[in-house]
Amino acid sequence: MQPRLAEYPNALVHGHAHVAALVARFTPYAAAMRAGIALAADVEDAGIAAVYTDISRGVDKQLWILEAHLNC
Image (tube, rainbow, N blue to C red):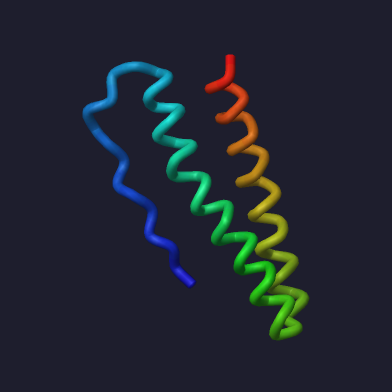
């Protein structure tokens, strides 16, 4: 499972647009991590599930911060 993230637009000027672009890229990545957790659980690989869970927690935290910034 290797999700391909959309290329980051290099023409962004405003900070809000940068945050929105980051949210648009973090969202599918977070979903991919959760799918990885489910897949690892399905094949009963607790070690990989734990790794994906740790990554997912960090990604979800960053996504939450970015989304909160958009709502300011």
